[in-house]
Image (cartoon, rainbow, N blue to C red; front, top):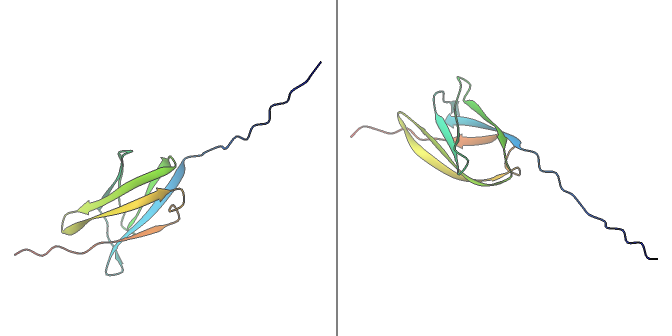
Amino acid sequence: MRCFFLLATVTLVHPADCTFRIEGSGVPIAGIRIKLEPSGATAVSEADGKVQLRGIDEGVYLLTAAGRGFVPVQIPLAVPAACAELKVSMEPTFPF
């Protein structure tokens, strides 16, 4: 009689919480909407420029930051590796 044992490795993937600090010229910016594609997660920055997206699955995303008076920014993002606080710098738009 033969006995066989199956050994398996299981990797548990937990969703990450990602924090972003939105700023322009080193000053926090409130009211900037960020969107993470392809997940569709969105949030708006607070008075301190910070915004958090919770429960983001591991993967590669495109972060878009946009708000009135600022040039939109797009940043490729790898989760969870890039989920320490990430600074997003924005430039103001100027009327012509």
